[in-house]
Image (tube, rainbow, N blue to C red; front, side, top):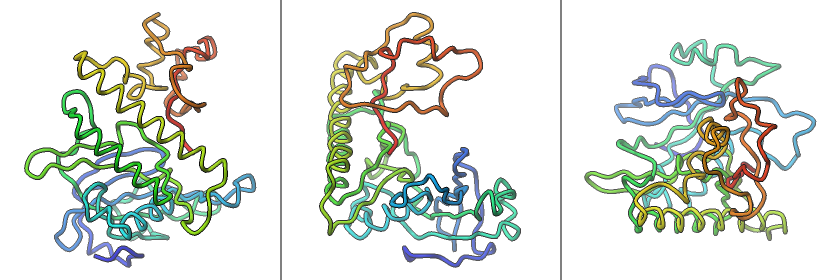
Length: 283
């Protein structure tokens, strides 16, 4: 299957199950011509006047740009990211009954959905203490640094995007590039862009070092904020007076993910800002 734009008809795609559903996209396991794939379908929005002109506002096309470069540079062939098969644009969901979550995605408020098709990797689990090995963490770090070297900024380096696939041929891989930035290779990075890459590298080093320490301790401790930063669980711990993490423990500034904050019964504003670890940023 090619890695460019695809012209697939509904009869060529068999939907098997929904793997994940979010406000931004729905991820399906599908079969295309008898081959199992992942079809990630995106809710698209039009560009707004406040969007910086240099920013790609389509999460789908951000992911496409990253995967196309990753494939061209041989990282898909190495198995450290899923293989990329191609993308679809302007999907008319009236012909795709399984895409009913996108029935309201119509202009002018929305755009027709787009989708990518990537390799289905069975038995993937995020890296955690139960499957932690120093070599696996080092592979993830080395892969991220290799992506940075080809001017791909992942931008969402939470453990949920660091996968371990054991059993049979083991794989350790990165997923989810929909908030990534793929910068030109023929231009020098600006000072701001270089800071983005430096921060991403420092954050990854912090995670790898903290996981190594937690493996010795036998429980998730130093790396805990990397898993639960800005989640309901974290806010509950802070409100209960349990241990928090000072912002000074982490390199660089951060931005909370407002979508994950508990808005029903938590007074987030009452929490001391210095208690809130925000090590991971969305760019």
